[in-house]
Length: 458
Image 1 (cartoon, rainbow, N blue to C red):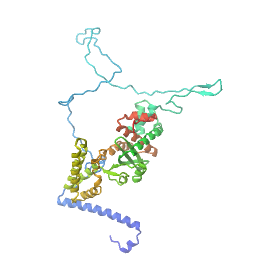
Image 2: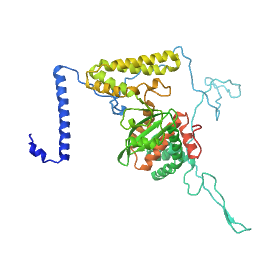
Image 3: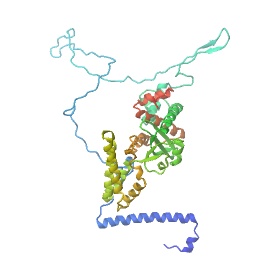
Image 4: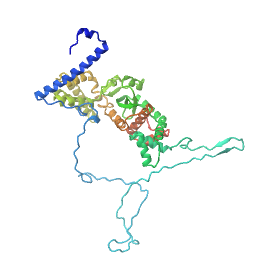
């Protein structure tokens, strides 16, 4: 197919751009086919696929191999280890089982003294049944002044309330902490608790809890903004059929979540406000690179996986040596407190020098060349963690904080309303923060819904 210059000059600019992009895509596709055919003719092995082990492909997108069945281990402790058993709990009821007659000859043993031959515990829960409280308010006119007086109701039994505080806490806990849809929560209440509740009532219970949870999440937001070191990441979220982004901003003690329709630097600026952390930890996403921090620590876990692909695909020695150096640096960071300060500083200097030496070699393959340019550009952001004990070498803590949200997204399919997404972000901020404080999740939610502070410090 040929096109004359005169015909091209009559085409508008937008049509030319579209045609150029289409041709560019076709060229890339044909180049890939030519390269595959060349490898096939020359007998080269095909390039390995990208997996979570050698790239940033999410674990959920990889194929899982069948796991080999393990042999059943013997019961009891390992050889040379002290055995441990379940600790006994205080007994609420003791059931004494006595012998009444001899099973062999039938002799009466009921009045004879007997010794303890064994003891064990069986833990159970009583059947779950709802308790219905009916509130009757009395009143009368005062004979002295004629004013009508009506009795006050106890806290938790206010007029207009349909469900009690314990039931509301359970609904919020099941819906957010485990992630269960409104329909599943409704089924649990019906089948386990013998309580018939409509889905609309479950939704209203969750919606009515928003204010207290919002205040607790606001407190977490303030604590994160005051931190010197912040890790951040994001993942997709579906809200009313549209793709949004769930952001996480976290420290070792505090986790703040935000669901936003955009994935750009404006989200960072709006969330942090005037806060300027000393170190920012993240991957190399374009939005994350717009952080306001003084220093930036690149997530080395992502770099190690990208290097692994160059090793698998090209047997690249340069990538192999760089990967080993990053592993060496991360191991050194773990032994900071066990090494003398002088020895630790000497090891850091050796790692820096070794990296500079490796960066003098330009690798041969395109994947490794891209990594070489990346490491050259962010050279000063690779080993910040070796100079600060409060900076980790990876952003794994942010990814772990988002893990339950990814499960929630897969189970529920997303959010139907903006308020549902906002409320979920507040609740998951509270739950992840409670985990890092070592707190009971249900008790934490109950404390917040009771208008009490859930976190003791900060």
